[in-house]
Every structure is written in structure tokens, then in C-alpha cells.
Length: 274
Image (tube, rainbow, N blue to C red):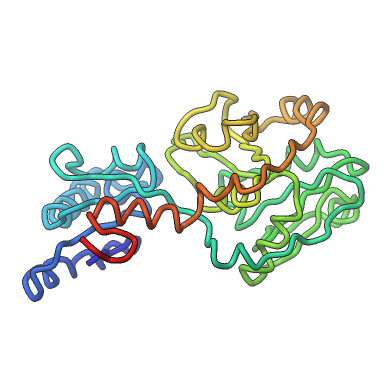
């Protein structure tokens, strides 16, 4: 039985599955829980949820995390069998996608999802040259000044079905990712960017590659790590040219690849034999 969280209360089902069926239990942490640096617990609350997670993990035959840093945030990871199974793009849908025609000779950046509190896009928008660049946003967006919407720097596509969102991503040159100070995330949207072998612009509190994101797209210079300031962004944009696409390169980041890795961890072959 494989149980994924968040929500983590689902992990209570592990005890039932073991008692009723004698099942092997895999707890799949798609996010860290008790030791998550972004969860601002009080000391008392942190102690309480740490105890809760320790109880969950005690029941597990295998614990999964999305990257090595998140694996280190599993309570008691030293005592339990813990492995990394990355998120990935949905290859079944991606195979049906036709790239959207975004081109008018400009370099097209794309951001999919919401702009969270750490995702300040104002400096990037200010640095874009509307004659050379355009940022396409798919998803919920904050209020932008009318002058910005009329400037040609930004195109809002709003909420879209996943296949349509992927079409817009596939038509762009470079995907946009924001990184927090903690830097432990390997945000899901990066897999959609890598699916189509886009360049990736990581806007970070500093310009030093770190954390799990630094491992993506390194081959071929696909990942660009830039401090999220007007000066650093202007320097990057002045010289940035999209890199060529590599046919078939994104397959390594697919959910099918992650599923095969998980089957190997469980000692199951692709045809279900053990």
C-alpha cells in the first residue's frame, strides 16, 4: 500500500493496512511534514507534529521523498529505509501536446502556477525589454498595473486545463522558477519545463546554485541561476539566448521513469513479477 501526503493524516491508514491485510506500507512524502522549514510552527507545535510523524514512520516499510534534501527532513530518516523518487511530468498528457505559437521573434519566458509571497516578479518585469522579451503567465495572478499589461512585457493566460497549460509551456523558450531562502524545494513545475527541454531561469535570493534545483538541467547549460535583483536580471537578459532543444532529453524527468524506479525499490518488475 502506497500512501502519499500532503495531507499527512492519510498516513494513519498504514496501521489498518498492515493489521487487516499484512500489507507492506510505503509512506510517500511529496512535501516535508514536521521538519518543513516553511511551516512556521511554535516550539510546542513542532514537538507535537514531530512525535506524530515519528509514529507514522515507525509503521513504514519504505519512506519516499522527492529529493535528497527532503529525505533528510524525514523524522528518523537515519533509522528507516528512505529513498528518493522525484516528481515528474505526466508523459501520457505531454505526448499529446502541440506547442502553442507564442512567437513574434521575441524570447518568450513562461511561469506556470501562482506567485507566492517569495515570488517577486516585479524586478524581472522591469528588466524585460518589450521589443525582445515577453513573460507568459499561466494560472492565478496578482493585480498588475494597467501600464504593465499594456507594455507588451506580460501576457496573462489565466487558469487553463493542464494540456493547454503544457501547450503554452512547450511554446516558450525559458521557464521561470522562484526559490526561497530554505532552497529545499524541487518545485513540480520544473518537470513540465524539462519535459520540453526548456531553459530554466531560477530567481533566487542569491546567485549561488544550491539545493535540489541545482541538479536539474545542468548538462548543456540549461539552468540559469540569477539573483532576483534589477541589476543581476538586466545583466542576464542582455546576453541571454535560448539554447537548442534536445530531442528526447526530457524523458528522464517523466513520471514513467519515476514509476520504474519505484518498482525497482519494491522489487517488482515492469510486468508485475516479484
